[in-house]
Image (cartoon, rainbow, N blue to C red; front, side, top):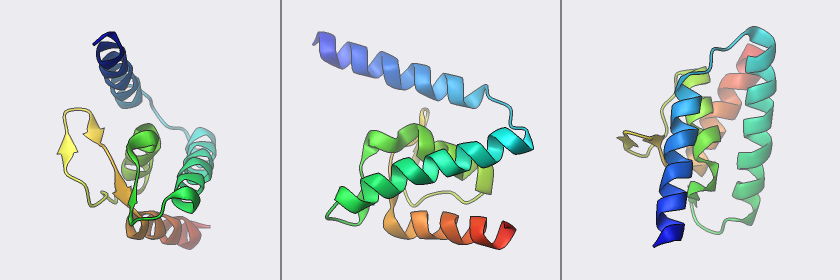
Length: 98
């Protein structure tokens, strides 16, 4: 029970801190690159089409930065997962911008 409460608190804290961040161009690019690094790693180890909930912060970061929402339903904490095709859309968006 304590683990559930701790995990829930951590998720809420992460969601709140994400929504309060402002992006300048340098932090935006480094944030996008970091998000790709984490989500690409999760993508490589994941057998199915859905990228696990381990990347919630990065999924929400990319959704906000690109304006492209993932396939998952949004909750009060943001998007909880994305698909491999969502990740590909974000990569395509980034490649076109650079």
